Amino acid sequence: MLIEVAGVRVPVGRAAEAARLVCEEYADDALYHHSVRSYFFGAAWAETRGLDFDRELFFVSALLHDLALTPPFDSHTLSFEEAGGHLARVFTAGLGWPAERRDRAAELIVLHMRDDVAPEADVESRLLQVGTSADVSGAGLEDFDASFRDALVKAYPRLGFAKSFVHLFQGQAERKPGCAAAELVAGGWSDRAMSNPLDQG
Image (cartoon, rainbow, N blue to C red; front, side, top):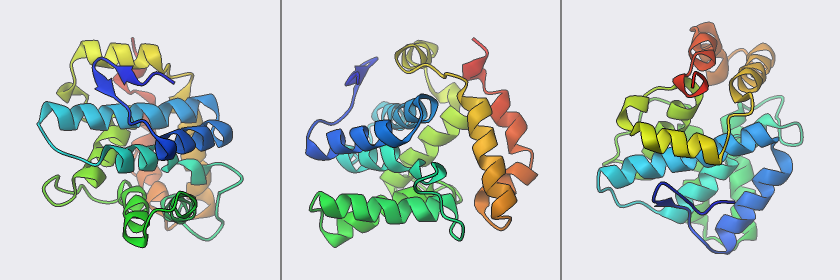
């Protein structure tokens, strides 16, 4: 993968490479690119504001955050973000992360589908919210230079992401009507996702 886009870098090391490999193996190309773009959006947002953040923790969480939407990890009882949190705990245990750091990876993934977290309270969780929101529905895209957005989409193309992602969320909503994805679908989120300005260029 490209380790730098428009001056924003990904972390290097065993944890980051393992997360990349797992995401690339289990996600299709569109979902994999979304996960990477979510990292870059969040990291760029932090760097523009001079925010310190745990780059490795954020990258690992970003690469794992949607894997519970894929058939091998999809839960019939848990929302995908909760299932994804458990997946993150198992994955990071294999890396030898201590319990507190494993819990943080899970927390980021769960919270990305909850109400906004203030960056001063939990910067990494806020970055995952910013990154995923920008990439899925275009929320907050005005905070990013057009040159950065163009470079990111060129490096990691959309590949029909909006249509495939809406389909995944609709499936979650049908099978788990009480989940956060179902609330989004019921609230017209699908239209916003399909009209993301990132797909209009």
